[in-house]
Amino acid sequence: MSCENKPRETESPATESPKTEQGETGAEMARQDGADDRPVGHAYLFGLGSPHGGDRLGWLAADELREALAGRDDVSVDCLAQPVDLFLHAATASDRLLLVDAMRGQGPPGTLRGFAPGELPETAASLSSLSSHGLDLAGTLALVDALGLFQGGIRIIGIEMPAGTGPDTTPPRLGKATARRLREVVLSWLDGR
Amino acid sequence: MSHTTRTGEIHVPILARVEGEGALDIRIEAGRIEALKLRIFEPPRLFEKLLEGRSTQDVIDSVARICGICPVAYQMSAVAAIESILGVTPTPWVEAMRRVMYCGEWLQSHSLHIHLLAAPDFLGYDSAPAMAKDHPDEVRRGLRLQGLGNEIIRTFGGRSVHPVGLCPGGFFHAPDMATMETLRERMSEGLDEARELIAWTAGLPIPEDDQDFVSVSLRHPRDYPITAGRIVSDQGLDIDPAEFEQHFREFQVPHSTALHAQLDGHPYLVGPLARLNNNLDRLPADLRRLIDDCGVAFPSRNMFHSIVARAVEIHVALAEALRLTEDYDPTAEPHVEVPTRAGVGFGCTEAPRGILWHRYALDDEARVVEARIVPPTSQNQARMEEDLVTSLTRFGLARDDDALRLHGEMVIRNYDPCISCATHFLDFHVLRE
Image (tube, rainbow over all chains, first blue to last red; front, side):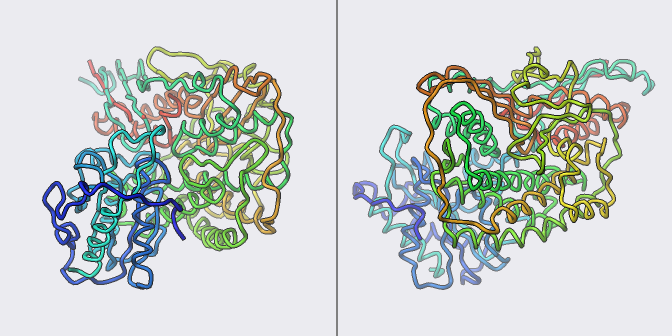
């Protein structure tokens, strides 16, 4: 089952790079933060976002990865409309968590960047106020930490969305180059390479 | 300086775990609160004006954007008003499934508030993550229930935030049987957790703080009020939603960009405690027994019992959703055709935070000529100020500023206010002279 059935389109080769803007290699981006090098436990891979606008990149990524990881029983892939929905899954302390989300301001469209929970941009962290309107990513990760979940490792991968994405613009798609690079990063992370 | 003659001002610049931007200013003179202002300075959002000229479907989809946690409430009040103008009577299936969808919103909103916003206050933690280290099972329960509420909303609305499944006359689609069976299994598990939750909230160290206030809610001839009913109070008010403007007055105060409201010239309470106080006899007998056994007596005059009322309403929501989907028919026609015509209509439903009243005037093409929306938080603002004066005085004005600030924040959070709905965060300042 896909989060949504939308075609992919070819992406400019200019966005394909062996390294991110920050100079990360795939293995660096996928590193097992907070865990030993050897992966243990079940892996949960969640695309964050919605079916709309630039925000849809997280769901498109989950659809891509679900297909790429079909047949593996050590990983669950899902699309989440809100980070807090990850608690609907029966995660344990030994499990691992990989979140894929759209991002802005980290390079040209299609740029991938890996973050450890503590490396999230300051604006994302400062917006976490545990408000009455739900938990954002940083607030959810604070609860994950307090509950002792996903100690097998947590990684967040951001995909840069095009500038000026809005209701009147064509929704961004996951380009072939970005999709291929994402698969490499995720496989690296899953297999502890 | 003697504490009994203490004079000064307190300003709370930031109130955590409240949605929206505001502040609390208190002036204490000679040991008494001389002035207390719940300052709401978030810019007005002018939503009613944005709706003018819009189609009825645009209204339903647009009002969902007013609030990220109670979009269903906004949609349901709007669609009720619109259907009353268009002369549409939803089918029993549509009425039942709208109630189920609304139960999903109560479930997610109440669960979030109980476990992540209010409970840390009663248990002495400064945040939900801090509480989660010592109470992981309770926090995970809350997150499961909240997620289940989101799932219910998503089932009918396509997504849990700003759902898009509702239309005049019904829904755009009926969920399939497999989806509903899976959802029902999870709702059954949730009902067991709801029973535990009532006992857990009743066992929290809740302050004794009985006050006089007027409880206002909907009342339905048969059911616990959610999607429809007459507007009633525990002081004898019993009116049709169309008569709202004859009894309730909204007005501007200099310190708030959100309107205040009064009932016949006095503050009043809307929300879970008011609903429960007014509708105990609409609860199923087994739930009444469960409440009786937990040791909290309703009707209650203690505003802090709102957390128990929310737990009770989580049970109501899950039991109702299960009852209404027991013989779920996936082949039902999800909506009826609607005509286009002019008129004025009213819709009033019970949002998680209290009654949400809408009034629309439509032209011959069923486009909005005029809209008016009265959200629950603006209705509760005057009551919150009244409560703060009473509660802080009872708590002891001689206490230090930090203690007063924390207690003030707890009083306000207890209402689960959505300042952004009413027009977001609160500043608190005390100045002592």
